[in-house]
Amino acid sequence: MSDLTKRLDETAKWLENRIGWVPDVAVVLGSGLGALSDSIFDKMEIPYAEIPGFPQTTVPGHAGTLIFGKLEGVPVVCMKGRFHHYEGYDMGTVVFPVRVFFRLGVRNLFLTNAAGGVNLGFTPGDLMAVTDHIGLWADSPLRGPNEDELGPRFPDVSKIYDPELVKLAADVARINGFNLQKGIYSYCRGPAFETPAEIRALRVLGADAVGMSTVPEAVAARHMGMRVLAISCITNMAAGILDQPLTHEEVMATGKMVEKRFSGLVAGIVAKWGA
Image (cartoon, rainbow, N blue to C red):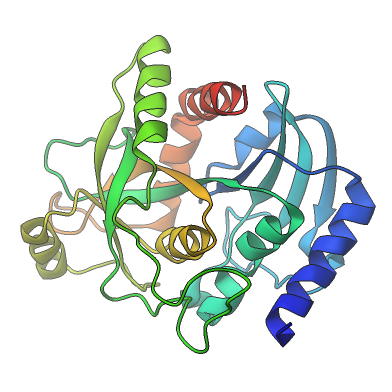
């Protein structure tokens, strides 16, 4: 057993002893999307600072709390705040919680994020199911010696975002009375927003949305054989599309505006996913 798997198991064992059960789905909440946690019942909240091995989040809109409970009757663990490479963390630290969830026994990962709209047909407030990603600029969380206990050296990521779950998400959105966009998410390192030239290049490459998270966690989860679904909240149009500066405050405000629709979508998906 490697040093990493020992640390993962120590943290997983600590959480198991604290809660006494294994969640069906792990949910990671992006910037401004933390209100979903209000829909979780019978919950136990654990600050990251109390969890062995967990780093601390430094970004406004990321509370830094792990929440265990039931969402629509389904046992879940919810990360209210994630870790980013741009905060100074290496990729192993960024994906540490996802790996802990796997060692705890969780096999389903639901990622959410706030993203900039690259597709000119999108508008702020749209929700998008990620069907694929462009992660060419991301340092891989799998770099270095392979952790054979977690997964293979060269994992297949051709269907990293489960097509059945994407369809499920679209069906739930339709039931809730709105159309769920589908598209390709491009990872960029941040923390500066992208330049207009970079956005034009990403559009040529086929990107529909751009953000600074999600891809590392998705790759790590797929490496371990977890089922992955990711939903982007389009909180702003990317650089150069509108003649206005980009701000994190706009990201937070749009997340607040769509929180009811977003929470209903996530809860509906989890209810059917965990059934």
